Structure formats: C-alpha cells, structure tokens
Amino acid sequence: MPQLLNKHPINIIKLQNQNIRKVEVATLQVFRGWIKECSLKLDLETRAIDDVTVLFCKGRFTYRDEATAFSEKIAGLLPNARQLVVELSGLEVIDSAGLGELVVVHMWIRASGCSLKLAGANPRIQQLLELTNLLSVFDVHPTLDDALLSFQGKTTQSRNAVNAA
Image (cartoon, rainbow, N blue to C red):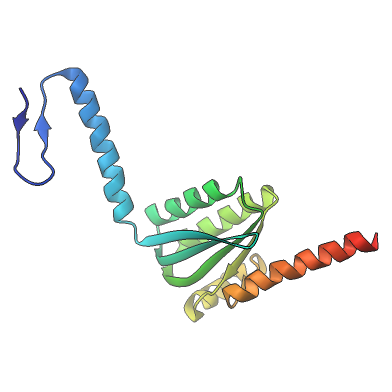
C-alpha cells in the first residue's frame, strides 16, 4: 500500500513495487522538465505573417537553458520555414551564450536554404552586435516591418530576374 509522504497539493507517494517505481521516476523527470520550462527566463512565441515565420523573443537570452530552448524552437521551425525573422524587441539582455547560439542557428538556417533576419534589437543589443562584428554576419533591421518588407523586396527581385530570363 502506498504511503503518503506529505499533504501538499502535489503528493509524493512512496511505492514498494519496482515497476511502479520506474513509472514514478519517469513522471518525476517529466515534472522536472515542466518546472524547468516554467523557470525559463526567455519566452518564445511564433507567428506566421504572410510567408514569413516570426519568432518573438521576450526576456533574457542567456546561458544554458534559454539558449537551448531557442535552438530547439528554431530546429522545430526549420523543416517548414523558408523565411524567418527573429524579433528581438522584447529581449532585456543577451549574453555570450545567447550570441553564440544565434551564430549556430544562423549556420543551420543557411545550410537548410532558409533566410534569416533579426529585427527590433534595442540599442544595447544593437551595440553588442556591432562590438562583436555580428552586424556583418546577420541581416539586422530596426523593426519587424522593415525585416518583412526586405523579404518582399527579395521576392520581387527574384520574380523580375525570372521574368527577364
């Protein structure tokens, strides 16, 4: 018979059966994953605007968990996205791990044939991109609208080149 260890809303039950113990461990791992997800300081939300996938970043893009969450989100978007904007206006801070993750993701995106643009970086993040010479790596736009318009310009140029041929 299970023995109740505490009386909190989430009750932990001590189980004697080994098979049930395995289920308990798996449940605990899922629960820890949920807590980890809830404790992330980076909120990532995607929206499709015309043919462009926009990833809105809000919070802190920093070491380990946030950087990993960002990469996982991008990896999930890549199979279906051809044009991607990472919208940074909601970011409070980005550290070296976050910048490194942006570079890694940029390489993935290029390898997959997708286009990436950054938009809406605040002055501090814009300065950081400049100091690290990443403005020469990324296509950075002051606003989301500017980034979206730049995709339309590319599409129009591509169509004109095809029509001219």
